[in-house]
Image (tube, rainbow, N blue to C red):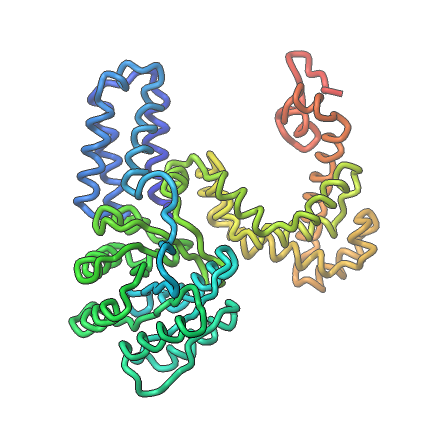
Length: 466
């Protein structure tokens, strides 16, 4: 989502890092470029002005200009101010410190993803917090809205309020809270109706529901793809209701990211959750420091590890590690790895969590890795027999033609997959042969020696490490 902004800022900071010393003029020139990058990313003008003022005041001080690494100091200051703008260190959790049933009010415009987000929150609270959840649709405007939420509740494994025709939204809210009390639910999620635009009728309705239920959380759901419109929506809802938290949807889209950077400053309410995609488990806590790291090209290793721990089967991973240690990694294992990677999300999203991968993301942007390579390679492996997957050496010309035809690919693509697999197994054999001490002594260059890398020769004599 922040790719364009990240690219612009990274180029500015690369130039700063390359200089041994910085004058005040050079710092101010860099701040002008940062200002333009933020404006192009759709960050609200007042937020940009405040951001640049804070950075400039800190960056032109003697501490930076006399620093041994002034470029790095400027980047650190920008990172610190970016974290402040996004809400400070650490995620802000949903407020569940209230008497059950705890009402959570979902508000926002039509099409923002409010109903889907209600289902996602229901699943998250059921699985991670072990709470009993009741979903209630208060949307009497949109046809089949109540049925949609009931279907989402079933998929999430939570309860939904039975549909009674003819009730007003406030009457449904009262019935939902009464059902929650009577049947022992921990949380009641109230999904209100949206409109295509903000109007008096919409605000009057959500105010009446808020007054009737006294929610512990009033969550505004906004579509990150709408840019400045999302900021205007947030301002209007906050002025009318007093929003306690924001959920940003479609964070995996190609929006410029300015809405996320503006939300905290405009509303004073923290971004608590972010959604990406339609899957019910595609909901994450919002960590300002991690997002700042991604924007500045520093990566987000913590989120990557957390996502891996949630999606990768530990037993399978341990079995695979044991096979790798014995040098018995085959195409079955390779296919399993492809499936694990796709579970973790898009490759571009994963690459965005790795430090220093911004430029590589740009280079590979046109390759459409997610749909082209992973799924295609999985299809190729799926067209092989079990014997071929266990022993790729037997795959000769006639077998390659059959596999290509069965997977809708070319013989060249089958060859490419086999070559990649061969390179991977070569590297694993090198790791096993060198052992941990040898790997530490010779470094990654030794691993790459037989794989077309530049690090195969050690020192001036060109001696191989073994």
